[in-house]
Image (cartoon, rainbow, N blue to C red; front, side, top):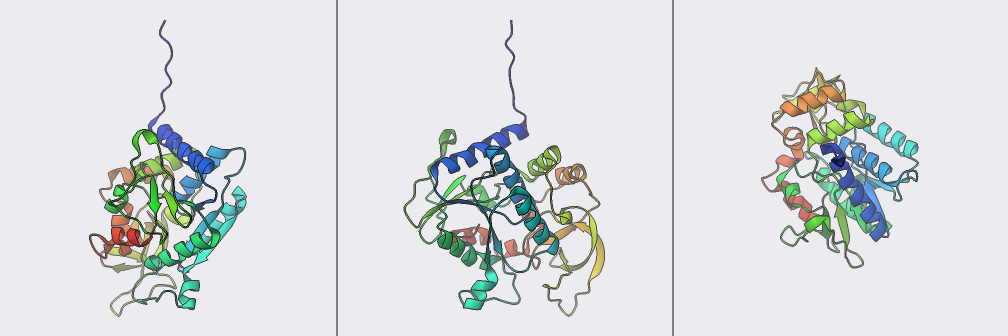
Length: 302
């Protein structure tokens, strides 16, 4: 008699790995926090965390590093989701750092790089020792280098040449007071995995991830939403287009793509045919240099 075998699907295996990571952190750290912007990756991360600890709510708060240049739809979705899950929301604001003179804003650049100071300040003020992030290795080559448990020193900095081995899914979270660990439960997921999971699990997302009409501006080969935060150049004229966003961040540097996809299934088909990651196609702040993301991560960025 042949004994039955139990095999996980590809998505079930990814989910099980993420559940294990969440539970490992909850068991070994005192004050974890989940970074939550309302974007698709942080929403999938929250969805998995809720399953990991059900029927109790996730045993940690969520934190949003607020640039002040957000899409209105995303902020509304963030607040609604936090209420629905019964979570405590911590907001650390870039504007507070600008007002206090801790960082200097360049009107010609977005505020994404300024998030580092606000993030590190939030970690220090609340004494968080583990910080869940939604970064994935397929997004960008610097993120491809990073471990699931990523050690950060007392200044919040990352050293890509000094990382801990993670053989057999064994994670080392040892750290001294003032240091912390960034944890990436979705490291091994791809954008296609994310969208297939969203479809399979019926994960709610902000409306801007699906096709809609909005005013846009063509800039440096990208379509940027014409919002109250975007300063137009002399030769730039807004026009209406049918678009959706592949990723969500600061409205001044997050581009959109022309699309007619109005459901997760249609987005899955679209993503499967794409040859550019969402950050490579729609994030102007990643185009500063070949090593731009790695330099920012060394400083303490996500």
